[in-house]
Image (cartoon, rainbow, N blue to C red):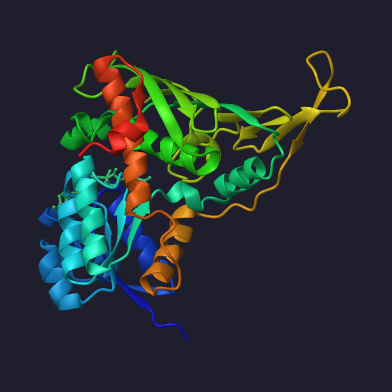
Length: 354
Ligand SMILES: NC(=O)c1ccc[n+]([C@@H]2O[C@H](COP(=O)([O-])OP(=O)(O)OC[C@H]3O[C@@H](n4cnc5c(N)ncnc54)[C@H](O)[C@@H]3O)[C@@H](O)[C@H]2O)c1
C-alpha cells in the first residue's frame, strides 16, 4: 500500500480553506497542520481537527509534512516557498507563482538548489474539459488554428473588495487574479504567446486596479486571439459561470471561449464542434453542422491534489513547474506593461528581463 502523503496548508482564506478540506477528505494524504498569520483562522483548524500555527517554520518543525500548499496572498509565495525548500518540503503554490519575476526566480532557484519539487496551482490544466480541448486542437481536428476568442465577464460581489490586497497593484485586479488562468490555459492549449497589446480601465470601481480589459494576443504559431474581461459586468459568459467547475458560482449553460480553425471550430465548454456538413463544400455559402464532444467531468482541484501527492512521492514530474509558472506570470506582466506604456509587448522580452 502507498504511504499516505503528509500535507500542510499555509494561508486559510478563500482557496486555502478549500485545499485543507479537500486534503482532509482524500484517502491518499493526511492533513498534518494549518498555518495563517491571522489567529482568527484557528477556528478552521478546530473544525478540521488539526494543529494550527502562525509560523510555517514551527509547523514544519513539529509536524514534519512531506508537502505544503501555499495559498497566501501572492507577495508571500516566494518567502514561504524558500522556507519550505530549505527544510525539504515540496510545495504546491497557488497561482500566480509570485507577484514579480524576481520573486518567481527565487522560487526556481530554491527548487534547483534543494531539489524540492514545485507545482504551480494552475488547476485548470487538470480539468478534463481543457485536456480534451487541447487534444482536439493538437490532433488537427480544427485544421490550422487561426484564432481564439475569449469572454471572461462577471460581477464580483462588493465584499470581495474588502480584502485590501485584491484592490492593489501588483497582485490585485482581474489581470493578476483571474486572467492569469486564461493565459496559462491558452499557453497549454494553443502554444506559446508571442505578443500582447492591452487596454484597461477602472471605469466603475475607480480602484488602483482595473475592472475591465481588452487584450489582443499573437501566438508563436501565427494564430491570433482576443480577450474581453470584466469583473463588473452582469454577464453569464465566464469560465466560472459556464464550466460548472465550482458550485459556488451560478451556472449558465453557455459557451465562453471559441477556438477557430481552417477545418472546424470549437465552442467551449459545451464542446460544440462546428464543421461543414459536406467536406467537399467548405465555404461560407454551405451549411455547417454541430456535434458535441463528450467529456467526463471531474473536479480539477481534486485531480491537482492527486497529482501533487504523486509529485511528492516522486512518481511524476510537476505538470506546471516553477519555469512554466514563471512564463504564465510573464504574460500577465506583459499585459500590465502594455496597459501602462500603451504599446504592444513581447512576452519573451519580459521573460528575459532580470
Ligand atoms: N486557483 C484558484 O482558482 C484560486 C482562487 C482564489 C485564489 N487563488 C490564489 O490563492 C492565493 C490566496 O488567495 P485568497 O483569495 O484565498 O486570499 P485571501 O485573502 O482570502 O486569504 C489569504 C490568507 O492568507 C493569510 N496570510 C497572509 N499572509 C500570510 C503569511 N505570510 N503566512 C500565512 N498566512 C498568511 C491571510 O491571513 C488570509 O487568511 C492567491 O495567490 C490567489 O491568487 C487561486
